[in-house]
Amino acid sequence: MAQVRRIPERRCVGCGEHFPKNTLMRVLRTPEGEIVLDLVGKASGRGAYLCRNAACLKRARKSGRISASLECAIPEEVYDRLEGEIRDV
Ligand SMILES: [Zn+2]
Image (tube, rainbow, N blue to C red; front, side, top):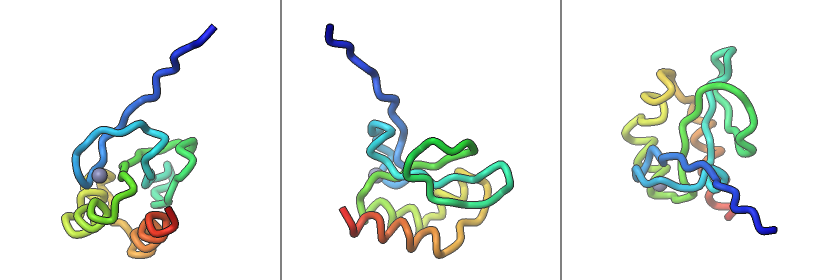
């Protein structure tokens, strides 16, 4: 029996498009107030999503949309790690 599993969609903060959650990268603010990259999507906390598109990352970085969404400053190294993730694809 084939079962259709619905994958939840999330909005990319760069382009504003919706994508299946498992294709997006997640920047997470942990309950401790730490900003981390959550590539598995399992950690708890408040998240902002980005699709794997260098232009989206650039736009999000420039506009500060991730930090606006998380209501917290994003360390440069988090952006650098996101950049690295995109390049690896
Ligand atoms: Zn995007």
